[in-house]
Image 1 (cartoon, helix red, strand yellow):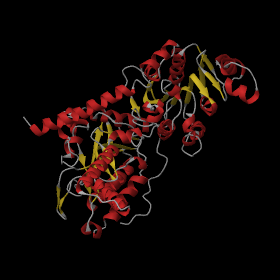
Image 2: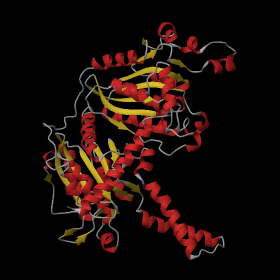
Image 3: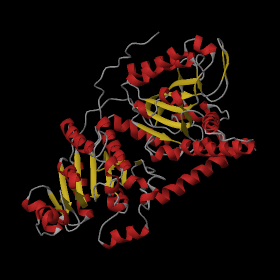
Image 4: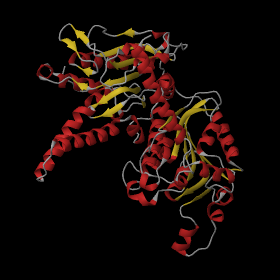
Length: 542
């Protein structure tokens, strides 16, 4: 019996159990009472609508399930950002669906709701995926309107994207299944086709109360903007549905008739399971983020047949670069090695650290994958670039810049999995969120921050101590420890994968065993969008 393996396995399964419990809470949206209230009106919940729309027995992935987690507590919270976003299959075609959750503040838009909607549209545009909007929203959440309405990446950007997607030929279909008010009324009408559910759906720029206040006209909401009005008088909507299922069946029928798409042409053969047991990942990942492990043990449990075709295996060993297949798709993997390795040139190298030789190797490998039209997968467990006089004199900044340049200018689709640490400039070089990965997911073991908790807490403590001394406050040893503990706890909270997922720095926290599905569906989505831009590294110091 391997005691270390068992302890690690127990720890990671506990993290997974916490994730599942958290997700089960999130799936209830605004709570059981509000779900029952929807059902009593003959309406389905957002999740029920999406599940009904998707093909049975086909895989799906949810984007941003934990969006808004722990945020807006003074406003009653915003589970899942008040909107459900999933990629799945409708009538055999891969699509992305955006469904307002009417159980969360009547589907009103919080700042994070806008961010999540824009992320869904970004995925649709990057991958030329058909996008379906299931609208049921009271509009902007007025107490926070100043954070939702006016800026470039706010609410208005959604309608701009509607127009851009239309010009790109990306299919957009909207079903109005509840309220659709004010500026939000433009979304379904800027879609290719729009339908409205009789009696429960309504569209208007201003509701009956606002109309009365503005121009003195007495009118009820149904006459103002119900299904009959818009299908028979205004011509705003294209179809009238008798209930939710009727509208969703109509969408299935429309999507089923969409023609085939131009393909990017990524290489795929018949899929095979990893030869090694995937579940052993739980026993390989250490409890402490400072502990070592062999990243090859992880990669071999993610790739088909556990087969690798490694690039420069004996050079720049702190980053593993290898060709492989995931679910049949050819991929280029760039992964941080987390155990100490020996370099012929520089001696021992710390795991999880990017050195000049590994940055140089990764840059060339990324360029090769672009040359061969092979999607890139980044497995992050990185503490940053090597520091100290030896590294600086060896040109670590120059070599790190080359790698960042290659990642930035890469034209093949990129996918990022945060396995463990994702610190500072290491996050950037290994394709963090700012570098446009098509999908970015974190394992429950992930940590995202500018630096590790212990180092950061000490720096923050020194700043706090200096501030107190400037105010004439004496800090004794007991007070020092209290302050340090407080600062460390706060910083650790902010490095958690839940903090990152809540703010959409990642697309979600996933079970490590779902990694293959996320990458496979991500590449399939990317295959809808032929590469139009030529790979060009720009100016780099060699």
